[in-house]
Image 1 (cartoon, helix red, strand yellow):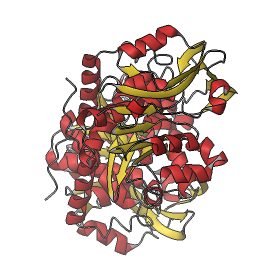
Image 2 (spheres, one colour):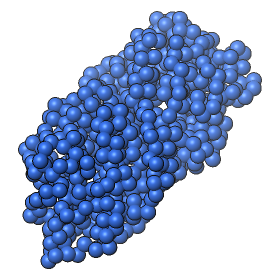
Image 3 (cartoon, chains in turn yellow, orange):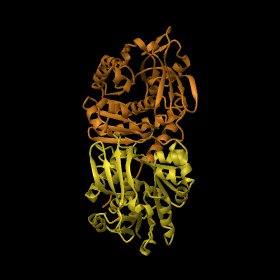
Image 4 (cartoon, chains in turn brown, orange):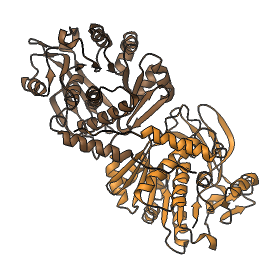
Length: 308
Length: 308
């Protein structure tokens, strides 16, 4: 009855127009676990880290119900390192450094206790690794959600399409949806991408919110208008974590409940960007989350008398 | 108890990636009148046209309850002409030709029957002309809404700020909000712009929807995801027309009703972009509008159990 999460656990160096940090933990699986653990446990984590990954950060995640049996620790190697710099609009960034380190030969072997998870969140990672995790499951999970990015469309499109064909929910951003489908209109892009396999498609538009498609049905979740976006790193992963955490908590994969999952994901992402790395996610309470979700309800709620 | 609309009535030549049209009627006041006339009448129109403006188009508007007493017809001159070309993303366009013609010395004199209107929609126009209309009113209208654009920030900022200080609702797009306020964050921009006078600020984000601010309150209305945007010309004016039309119909200027007005405006704009110029607006029925507004309700409606 639990959630399996696969993804990177890393060190990041981040520079924004407002501030910089030389070394902070990051990675898709780190953000997903911090976000999802507000809603469900245990979280069966699948990742690889070096001997340099702080024990304190591992302990904090364990105390939140994150199971490290599936996290390989290569004591003599270094964790993945990424360094990036954001521009003024915070929607675009330059990657300055990428050191794969432990991720270079990552070939996860799922512990037996992981193989019956009902819900799977494939964080952004090499598509072949995401696929390998699916193939190791004892039976088809109730829901497999997948995040990916344009990089894999450039270097591993065949593997990517095969993996996409195996999942229920694909999460990508608007430019990635256009690249993957060859369609500029997001409505047309959604139709083409759903034909590749996923029943549900989530198109993330950053500060402009997110769209959920299932067949001809569409739902729009706004992003919360914020005074400041301090650091967008991990916002997409945090969104994914809130989304899958809500699904795992409610065990309801209807379109109606997916809407709520997207609102929860958007609320979590709105916290993520308030401080560097996962710092803000590590300090918020359930009351903070409820209050933030209520802000989303207020943001879009209206009662209209239709024109006669 | 009626609505006063001021703005241009023009000929446009439009080129999009899909098609082109050499001469079609346009102008802010044309779109506003077509849109608003679904909800309220009479509409006291203030504009100036040349002898070349088609009588048939005038008659069609008159049959919708648009009063032409305040529309000056300069028989021996030509109507304003604008020609523009859209790029693939439909969010940016190049102006190819601007011929002011009758608009060059436009100095509207309001008919007596116009001076007691409760609701005023100042379409995008020279700020000094917008201001002159306000000053000719017998008493302060119940609500004055104003549309403008970056061009006036570049060439007439003082007049623009003075006019803005006199209105209740300002409608601008996101880049204009940033230019006017000097703030990148739209939340901070909204605070600064409200301090310039308007109690309500609407920030239009095109395909990404619109934000309504009143003090610390904020509401977000999405744009309908469309298969195709055929021609965005007039979408902002059509939004303004739907907005003010709903307000004039309901006579309710509360924040709650402004939300509905923005949904109505967004629904009207989603029709506008489906065909060239005001063509689509000229053919839709009230049933079409109700159905479209229902799509907006479906698009954002969710029922969430807050996290315990």
